[in-house]
Image (cartoon, rainbow, N blue to C red):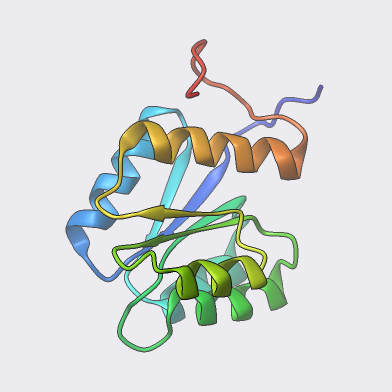
Length: 139
C-alpha cells in the first residue's frame, strides 16, 4: 500500500460560510487538506488548478447547484468521488444525486462522525485505501 506524500485534498463547496468553515474543521481534524469554495464556479477553478481527491457539495447554491457543479467538475476529473450535502434530502434529490453517481447524500445539519465516516469510505472505494493520519477509525 502506497502512502501519499500529502494528505488527501477535500473540496468543500457551500454558499454558507458557517457550513464551509464547519466542514473544513471536520475534515482537517482527520488530517485531510480542506479546499473551500463558496460557489460552483469557484469549485471548478480549484479543480482545474490543483489535485482534489473528493468533493463535498451543497445541493442548493446561487448560480450552479451542487449537481450542476459536479457535472462540470467531472469534465476535469471524471472519477472524482462526490458527496452531496443538503437540507432538502427528498426522494427526488436523492434520486438525482445517485443518477449523477454521487457516493452519498448527507442531510443538514451535518454530523461530524457521519461526515468523516462517509468521506473515509468514499476515499477507500475510489483509491483503495485512505491515508489515515490518526490511528482511530471514523466508523
